[in-house]
Length: 519
Image 1: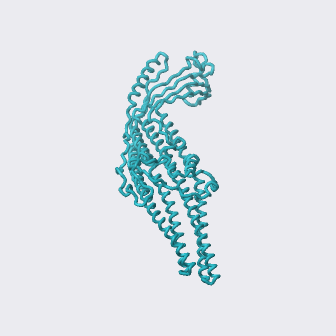
Image 2: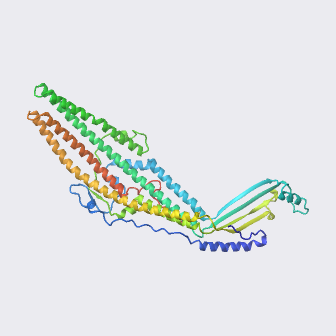
Image 3: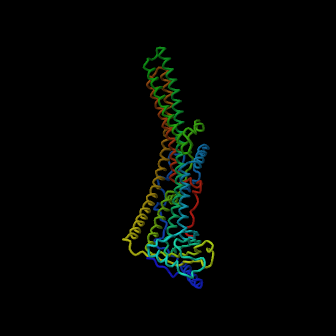
């Protein structure tokens, strides 16, 4: 239902309606402090006060201990003390396409927020037009228009002809008074969406840093395993020469030679697989840096040790996660946006008040356009009151309320997942360290056993099978040790990712706060 107040065009009557309109503006400004719908209250994460005892107790054989001290997650990759790893992460953070896309999405959210916030302010536009019109004389309006054209005593410059010209130059303004907070709730939701985009950008950056570190550590692990296989291959070829010499001297048979040759070929078969892993890791790092495959080959082809872990890894307390992890903060922002949209839907139940005004000059001839007699003015408020919509608005409120409940569940689920990731990360980190200690002892024993087996074989005390078994055991233990050493460093990367660190220096404004909700 639309109603309009009295229009005023006579010069003597313009001051009074203008004063009334000013009073109406003041009243609207007073009432605009009301916003219907639920107000958002940040949820309290359901987290324990401390980590489980198994996560924080000192590991028996671990050289790197986990502690509940305040975590230092800023630039966590520097704890590995590997300049190449630091360089790769910093370059990828600047050049990665996913990060750049996330920054653009932040800008998109901010632009959408500005679009929404513009509804709080009046709109003003200027217009100029020219029209040449002819009315049909076979219609009532056209017939009356033709008869009036012969009326004498018209003002100078005014003629009633058919067709006729009309020039117009004017301004128009409109302002919807946000009495019940529909626009302000929309701006609140847009602010929360912007914050969600910022947190999503931070989450993308954390995932990128973790992926770079894991690919780099895997590359160094593959290089370590390749060096072990190469060393084993040299040992096996030496054993092959020894068996051939003993066969030529009549001290052994061709069976030992063939067994030694088979072992050499079996070890050689492992090298192509390792080379494939190296190529895949280099290409993965190139992709994360938004470069073509093989771009980083020259930088990374030289073998280097697996980045060592620090002696202490503080992880803080569970309550820190909700304040630090971007995925938890993102789901909280999504819950905020969903709650605000409930208020938008509720506000649609209430009337909408709009004040509009239009004025300017109209004339038949361009020469008479800018004259006092050519002025026109149209100003007044209107109200739009919803009466019947077959339950559409009520259903929309219910829809937004259900979405808010879903967002609350998503928040709780994200918090639980974060707790699980940290606990699992700590468990993997400590148990793999214990496994590494055992494998170090096993490798040392296997190396000593191979030395003794070779001495016994060369002395004719034992068969060549014992030497082969000792060599296989040594190779297996050393490869397992290399894999576990790689796993320990990779576990620490996963733990840092679970703690939610590394986004503090996000590029492209991803670490900045959103704008204020209401001007």
